[in-house]
Length: 138
Length: 358
Image (cartoon, rainbow over all chains, first blue to last red; front, side, top):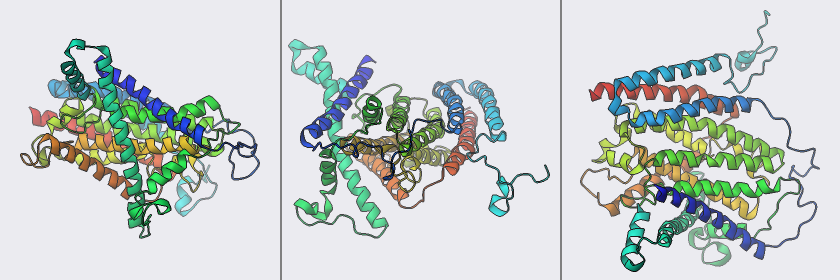
């Protein structure tokens, strides 16, 4: 087994070298004529407006949280799947209960519309916008 | 497996130094060096075929130079070489406002992820660099390193386009990892092993023993897996992280020259890995489609390569056929379509196995 993961270790080192070598070649061969304008952040040719390190949309955190739960679930499924044929019906019921709890969670998130990317509501909407129209009675 | 083979060979060649640790290191490094050669040649080949296939599909002229030099070789064969040389002799620019250490780290991370996932890919019956007992799980795990690299690249550039691209890629790749993982769970349930070679050995005996034809649910599982890995490798129609029409170049906006070339190469390397995993898990790997015909180890390499390159061709084909999705459509497709269907498939196949097995 240490032979397997020793190979992984050496492969990572080779990968690092494989990236460094062209960088060194570029450092030797490529022109280097840096100016202040060249090192500016690209913003379609405009003068840079502030920094990009700002507060970001919370929807990405929601996705990350849901992902975390489901990814752990998939990790649990892998060892279960390996021995599934030996254990048979018992394993099916056990995993069925486990998955059911998670599916309830997914259904909850779904109903709470946290899976919808666009949560915007418009005051008046008809046709293709009717789904995001506000309820006029309220 | 190849490592053990070379190690034994070295021990027999030099019996007085048998069992030497240096031999083991040489045995580990030799196949990796061969792999680097393979990736380079494959990179040129696949970039050329992407240019050519796209020009055939869109009915335009690809590179068609005559003769060497500036005309990019016969049929434009030297076009990828010219592209490579151009990228490698470009000025190396790191924006002044970028987070320099992380900016430099990102290409390293993505290439480590791409290269280390290669070593568990079975190229043939005897040709697999390390025949790990958790091979398929290992490839999923190492493949996720790309997310960290992309989000590092996007964040450290200190560029709005890059930040958007990095965030989108993180959301997209982690979302689509779940349907891809669930699809592979179904395969593992059928093959009862995480080892790549054992999964392939399970599918011996012709076309209809392949896992994709194992039961009526498997074609759906395969389609879900294939679309999910398209999203994971940032291929069109899921190339939102680097969509050039809205985000300039996404997370690689500030990268140029060599560092950009590394991102580019890693994307194509990842395409090969996921196609090889799809071929292994669903299409019988190096098994011949005929049970006792053309089934020697040498033909195994041919079958594995033809299946993998066919899937890569399908990826290129899809790129020029399907328009790009919107972010909300992307998330809708993953969370509301693929994950429920994927979970249903796990249950359906589990019940199928229990009913059929008893």
